[in-house]
Image 1 (cartoon, rainbow, N blue to C red):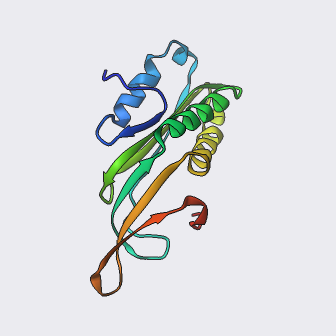
Image 2: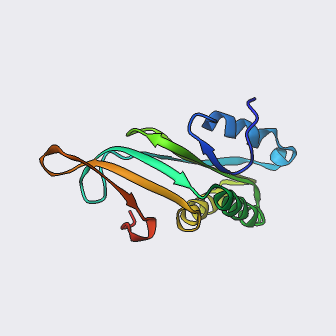
Image 3: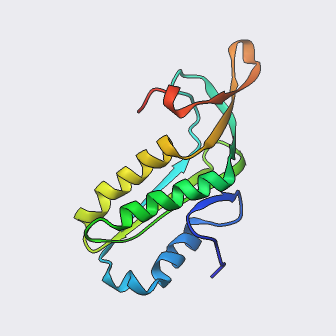
Length: 156
């Protein structure tokens, strides 16, 4: 197993979902788990406004992002029936379809996993200082790039 740091931000290519799952399963408490829920965020081919996405660039205030993501995981691990929570967000340049984030929740039962998985996703999107620059194909086929703020984007 490739050694990866705990929840936080990582450079693209530094880890995979397989690495995260192996890490979750290697923990001593994993024997209490009866379910694992996984969320994998990927680059969509179009914006909420219908523009064609050509790529994304993700940056972060890394020290603070690691702190926030670890804090979210710590909070959620304290919920009844939850064995482990990990959030790993990738940084770098991405093409459509590439993986950006892995959120994994292990719990005693599926009923304790799904709500925590959703809460983990909503919280990292709202709380972590991770910044997204979209490159889109604008009018007349011209590329344009701009920084996207999660709190300004319509929710799906």
